[in-house]
Length: 157
Image (cartoon, rainbow, N blue to C red; front, side, top):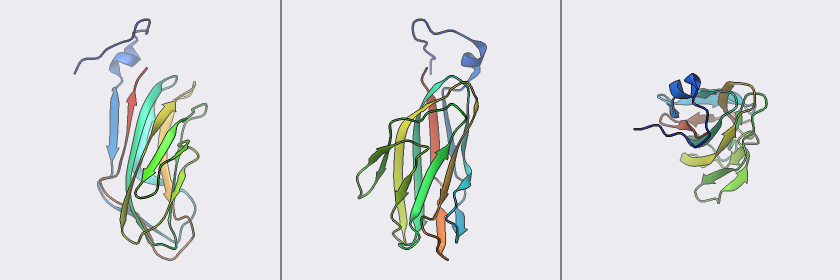
């Protein structure tokens, strides 16, 4: 794979050494019970550099009952914006929002996938894009994010 630079783009050591695409995948299921407060996912976190633009893809398979449902959000470094995120879950249509606004999904008492796509535009602060999730309604039943769920960010500037 070759690295290409746009006209006028500064060629810096950081840009040459930074991976263009990063992906983090869950290798084991993660379960919560009776928790409607967002909690950091154990695996779905990626570091980002300051003053960069990334395209992002989040794919999660969750299992939550019809009473607790499921909610997900992302946290980002100070000064970062996450415009144009579109959330897609079958059979519901996608909704345009920000990664940091998050989304809510119905529980089905079975495995349910969704995908989200958008931009991550960092400001002057480097840090982490961290996925958080919880039950929408506190319920004494399991809510699980399945192994194989992942987040990927590809630097495009």
